[in-house]
Image (cartoon, rainbow, N blue to C red):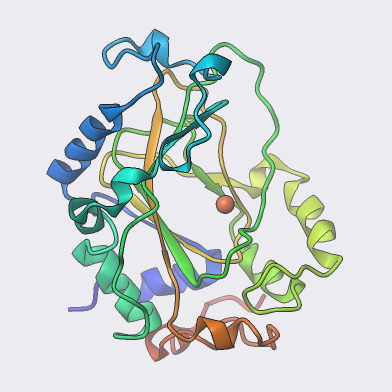
Length: 269
Ligand SMILES: [Fe+2]
């Protein structure tokens, strides 16, 4: 049985992202929530939400990439190499099955790790700031964000600018590399002009978001009282070294499986 229905593939193609509720194993999500506290900023107390408010105190910062702590970011990457974390996200049957469906079985490598646990700390009592999008700089085909804890509305959920992949894809000289044409900035400004153009995800432990490599997105501001905790993984075709030398051309789905290519988008934009 395929993991994604035709309607889900259509949604992903049209909007550039897709939410699947309750995809991750609840026990592995709980384990990730526990392990986050292996080596927290010194003044953070696991059972005291008041102690989690950012920014991290300058004397508690760590620029060590394996457990990066600075500002409102806390990225516990070291744990991402452990086998159970790979089972939690990349090799989760829904995630892996969706990737095989979208990129084709055997066309991308077995995972050696996932990006780790990425946290956005609560901002505390601050004025709300506008949303700013970016497009990722490294070459990949699509990525998955998984929530290991409750993410309330305005709680730092992954935010996308739906349909923007269908604009940005054509705005680079390379199909995958970060070689922008001047159109990127023009289109960024247009998408950002109204907050309604963006969609902020939120949800429960186990919910995941797939997103296209050229979609405008951000790890949004966290106005909740809790730490936004997500796990991340990127899917990259084996053929990427060759594909990234190519220009975008006129078909955004050229490198995807027939399962994806054959589904009509359902609008004429
Ligand atoms: Fe990003």
